[in-house]
Image (tube, rainbow, N blue to C red):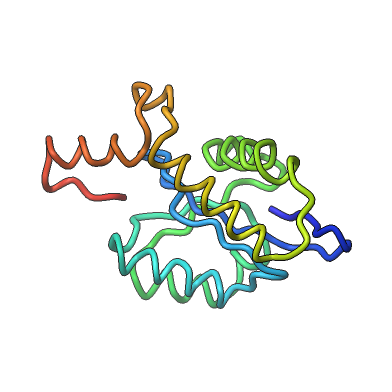
Length: 158
């Protein structure tokens, strides 16, 4: 995603959502987010949760770069790119992005990246821990995952 600060400088948001429980795993904000940064973000998430079986994404340059492909191959992660011009092939992130845009990006005039980071992180926490999701039986993503682990202790996040 992208937006602009009040002074007109553009910034990017790199969002990672778990398709299974709809949890927003990361919202990274910066002026640009190149492929090597995407790899660092995914490596951090993988250290916390294990490597995913696959990653579905659009065809942005930071996602089709060799650095991400090499990382995925090294860790046995399948990169599943949607067809160009077919955003609904990645419907969960598109829905998430729309909600984030409506509730945060369109509601504020940001002066600094720090403001964007604080507001998006607070929103992400609420989204994961407090907001009921109809697709999860009207419970928040974190609680849904916790309940899933209680039923099946061998269940993985991916």
